[in-house]
Amino acid sequence: MAALASLSKYCTKLAKPTLQTCFRVPNRNLNLLEYQSKKLLEESGVAIQNFRILEGKKDADVLKDFDVNEYVVKAQILAGGRGKGHFDNGFKGGVHITKNRSEVIPLVEKMVGHKLITKQTPKEGILVKKVMVADSINITRETYLSIVMDREHNGPVLIASPDGGMDIEAVAEETPNRIKTIPIDITSGISREQAVDVARFLEFKGPLVEKAADEITKLYGLFTKVDAVQIEINPLAETDDGRVISVDAKLNFDDNAQFRQKDIFAMEVHEDTDPKEVEASKYNLNYIAMEGNIGCLVNGAGLAMATMDIIKLNGGSPANFLDVGGNVKEEQVLKAFQILTSDKNVKAILVNVFGGIVNCATIANGIVNATKSMDLQVPLIVRLEGTNVQAAKKILEQSELKIESAHDLDEAAKKAVQSISMV
Image 1 (cartoon, rainbow, N blue to C red):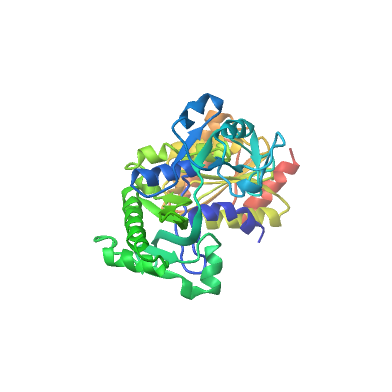
Image 2 (image 1 turned 135 degrees about the vertical axis):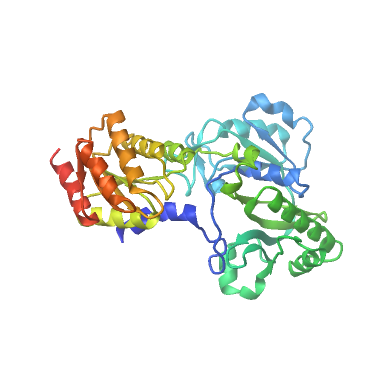
């Protein structure tokens, strides 16, 4: 269906498989840059590469005590494929390696203040504001380790594979015997025996077994400390000088724990996010932009999908949709209308709400107040059904506002499409 593609971004926010063949893990909206994740690992004693953060030549002094054999210079944006990307100034590559410290600042200057374009960025690229300069380590072997909060096991699960540095979903599909899964008792945590067993499964040998077990234990400690729902280390690497290093880390957090993790959530980066999405999230709303001209206010992803499909079937095109959820208040409805109409492409608004938990009368009062306070200038079509719907319809009727009611979704979609053609 047409709406399936349109909702893919939203559905990814709700649930994204880490190992697509095995697990479903909530994917939260908090986005951290690579260096921010590394900082959290470092604060918990996890072994990582030494690094510094620069914003330009004004920060050159931070390199004075950073003497290593080889430097990795990495642009910090929320996108993969940085090494093969290019900048809007013509400079090639968002990742560079040099043995000469004097070359670091010129490389940083070519990155900061310019947009990096990769396969995962918008076509115009993402502005680079910070660059990470890290110690380049010699990796002799790569393994995979992650800890995820898994619904099936009702708690955290440790997933390990000696085949790191690659697409772990492919490993799970092609060689499932190379994946080890260990449920962890949330009350007692990971035991030393379990950590050592995992280290051996990852094929660490000799004294590296104990070192790897230490790193695994520290990573689980970080997992619980920061209310993570996922910590993925790919690779957990063995180096030529006998270290076990977390080279690349991906962390996802439980947004219900934001009140406990204020410092972490304050680090969130919105560099490639639509400002309307950011504004909606502040009010516990979910907003997704599209390319049509009918704004959609709904409650629930399934209803959003149906609404957009029926608009399409009736010859229209959704400009966006805004999901108010099941516990919406009147003030959130007002904010929802403000966000919807901030899109200049919106020529009509279709409200499609099924009141289960949500009270239709609450929605109706919110619609009336929003229409009055905003002096709404675009056609408004409303279809309400469910809890307290008769009272809601009466509120709309008595408002004497230009609100077009519809008995069902098909009628609502037809009226929305027709209203645009009449403008």
